[in-house]
Image (cartoon, rainbow, N blue to C red; front, side, top):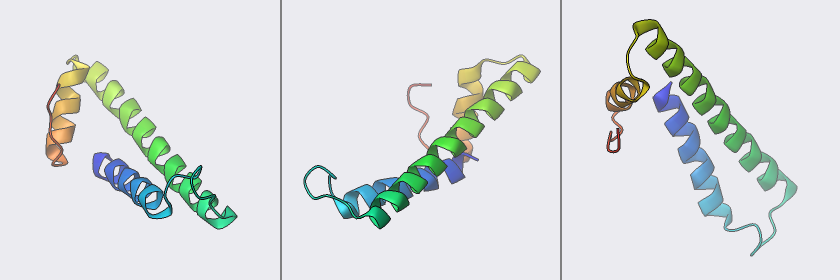
Length: 82
């Protein structure tokens, strides 16, 4: 789930970088729709991940930050701040 959320975030970031700031050069409807879809996918995946991590931490009686750090490490993401 963490990898999928990271991939979705990367896709949204790539589109934003590719299209540039929408206030500098207006995006086409297709560009806007594609970016908004990528952004929604990222948010939905990240939300679902946070819900799953929270539920798992409660079930296991372990600190949320500890579980988040393990999930991030398993996905190859730095765990600084956890």
